[in-house]
Length: 142
Image (tube, rainbow, N blue to C red; front, side, top):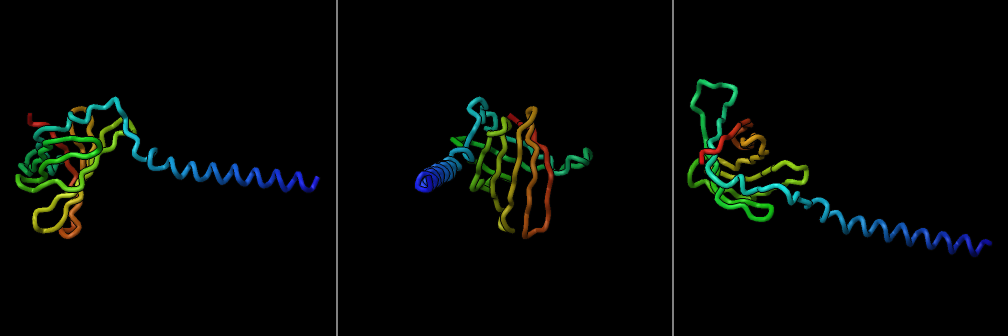
């Protein structure tokens, strides 16, 4: 009976070990999961960013031009013409298009995130060196 208990314990440990290793191998697949039903190409085009959406009387606008969407990334310009988008990423695993990018205009890097809802982009831009966080809403120009 004692020998049977040791053998059962050995089988159980092997099963647990196999399960844990399998779970770790699946993590990259699960975290990169994207919804196949969402057309991320809706992002391609020129976007007008209202940098102070709470104030309808001002003219504080910027731009984002998305020229290409491929796999989980995109290319273009952010804030003004000539400022290239870097390290862009897309995520659709929750059924919503989320995007993130880095840009810079010579005064430091801008970390930007957004999501697409009802034909608009809702986002925020954080400039660490300039010590500000801007919240914005963008409408597509074309």
